[in-house]
Amino acid sequence: MIVLDTIFVFSNENFSYILKNDINFEKTINYLPAVYLKNRFPSSMNLNYRGLLFNQIGIYINNFEINDLQTGHHNFNIPLNSLDIPYVKLRNFLTLSTINYLEKPKMNFEFGQNREKLFNLIELKIKNLSLSYYNNFEIGHYYQITSFIGNYGFFGFRRNDFDATGFFSPQTILPFAYETTTVFLGVINYKQIGFLLRGHYDVFLYDYKKNDTTIIKNLKNEHFSLKSQVNYTLNYKNSIFEFSYKRDFLSSNIVQKFLNKQFTFRDFFKLSFHTYLKNSHLSIGFEYLLDNKDYLITPNFDIKYRNFLFSISTFSRFPNFLELYYQDPANVSNPNLKPEFYISPEISYQNQLFIIKAFYRYNYNLIDWVYNSDSLKFYAQNLNPINSFGFELFTKEFYKTQLGLSFFKYIIDENLSLKYLDKTPQFKFSILNKFISLNVLYIEKLDEKLRPIFDIHLKYKFIIFGIDDVFEKNYINDWLKPSRKIYFKFLKE
Image 1 (cartoon, rainbow, N blue to C red):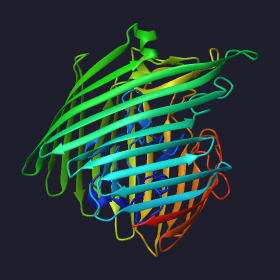
Image 2 (image 1 turned 90 degrees about the vertical axis):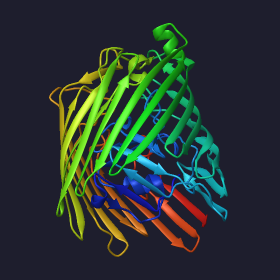
Image 3 (image 1 turned 30 degrees about the vertical axis):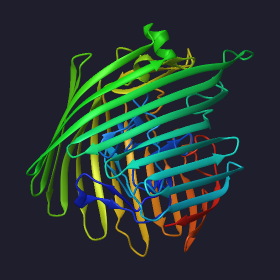
Image 4 (image 1 turned 60 degrees about the vertical axis):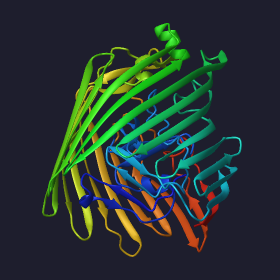
């Protein structure tokens, strides 16, 4: 999908993790401490960090948030390929930076076997044009085309078709599910002014098992969402001011059933302020929802002292359309949900050998789906309070090798069965090498055992041979299904 030269994970860039191993985006970022990935398809990945849910992780391209306004899913359903993105930054938001123009054409071709099916991937970048095509036969495929507009931004189109059985609900309730998504994304920046337009059309086709003998076939959910945003940035000495107006639009058969109308809007006014001093950084975010006349304030602060970094970060968000309005045979939304909020103090230490971070987080009104065993359904609810703590350790590169270690634990008083929030203690040990990688994970409520995920990737000039998940232990990246992947890759740089 997206090949990285470098990944930074930062509160302060002096305390960044730097990965220089050139594998692929899914595998490389999954070796970072406290990063947790789930995906239904290569372009439909959800990223969790330090136990945060996927819709609490903001995904940014050229400083514009592109998260799906309906669900928070499909954060990587974007019309960009591995030749378009030189680096990524990750905090409680993820920023992708794009390359606009290449003098010489570049190509990435990959083929192999995954889930006992053949697959192929081709990515091509010719000057300002970017193309991709992926096909994993009988499981899914995607294609995309993107045109870059000089150094100002890009417009792109992407279409995905994939099997989503087992992702939203157990097969005892939804025995079959197939999803198609079509996305249009445009990002333009000119001097201090920026513009974003993101359209997303999602069709979810499924069979519903009503009882032990009856299956209702070919039920369909259709959703079209449109996000538009205008942004103005002002730089003054060591400070940055950002002003933006955003409008979210959703047309959905679920909205029609729930609100008795064909579509709904939400309008936001957003302000943010950043100031940098010699050893400290302060930022304050303000978001105002015009429809409800409600607002969120999120301050963040960090200060460096010698080899230490002390920081306090906050996060808050309004419920999305899915949590407010969505209903199907397995899920029931809640229009009375309140915005969620967390505050997290953290201390970091680094030297020439490693970086270590310890943090605590207090979650208030966290939104998740709670399972009711009587109705066999999940209900969207605010959960209070939820405390969590953890630590991360990552070494600097030595002999082409880096080691990572993380531990994370939620503390929840109530005995609830949750859809996304994982109360299992999350432990991960990683070895990331130019040739061999290993993840040992204790991180999944479906499997509470240590699970080694062993990968091999050998490179000679422009040819790469790889085997991912040699022992078929990976239940994270391919949702419930082990998936050894054997492939050859040809990269023309």
